[in-house]
Image (cartoon, rainbow, N blue to C red; front, side, top):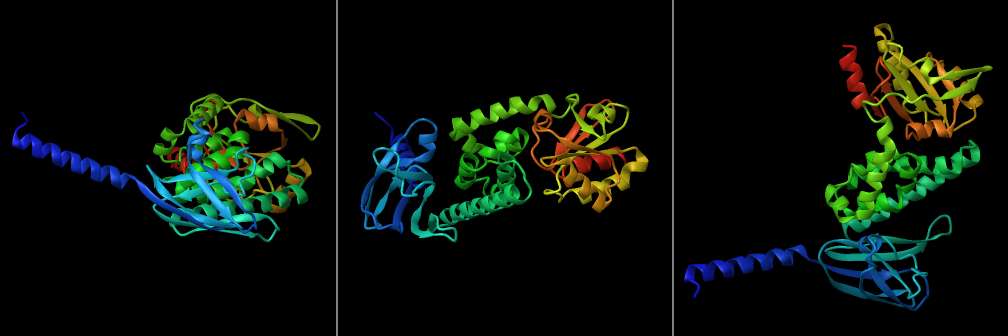
Length: 363
């Protein structure tokens, strides 16, 4: 027979466990109007489980002439859902909807481009999801500008347009499900065309979400394999451009006893160029060599930019996509090579690791 002490302790443990379990649950409510005069019955799926191969249904959503019949319940933790018909074809735009403690309100409307969108509100995560989607829309606007007026390849332009929003989103939401969903749905192009950048973005995500998503873990392992050959400590990989009737190799500059900073840049992504020029002027007398590697545009456009802005260091114009791929590079990127040609540091600007390395080397 249990002692009175053991019995009381067991009851307290049970009560504490029950309280902890109840606190772990979220009680959600989904309401609003989808902005379309339709009457429909949709199945609701947890997106994270669906992406991981589970396809777990968490209930049925009824829509009456566009009005959502309030959908309530409990879940173990905050989730994003999509609601679809039995053929998984018609979602009525109801995807990446946040279910969290409290109410998520939906409002369907046409945006300025005539597209049907769902605005989420009622709690901070729902509002953040709407903000993220708006960031995506602005990225697409930039895509049309880049592709239409500058002749940049669509794939590169789309990835860069996404990347311009990536830091804002991941800095604000690396610890919650909004950041996780950004990785899955919007950062995919960045990861595809720039595995190094994709790895940086994934590593901004809370490890809890990586642990919950085999899909994201698999993507990270794949990107690690792609960037490993040009990670810090590895020897440079050579490439060449045809310029002024001559073949110019990266190896003409790298591996000859100097520190060499290579700036992958484009005239449509010039933000870091002034900082690189300043670093060159600051450290050139101490032995730093800087080389520009112009990507993603006709050589003539890069040459015009260099001439207009009087950029003082040598350039490699018209770097091809396969050469970018050697380094997993998309858009603006900096790589610092050591005197023996090994990679010392790499990153997207001089404010972080590369800037610190230059200070250490040339102090």
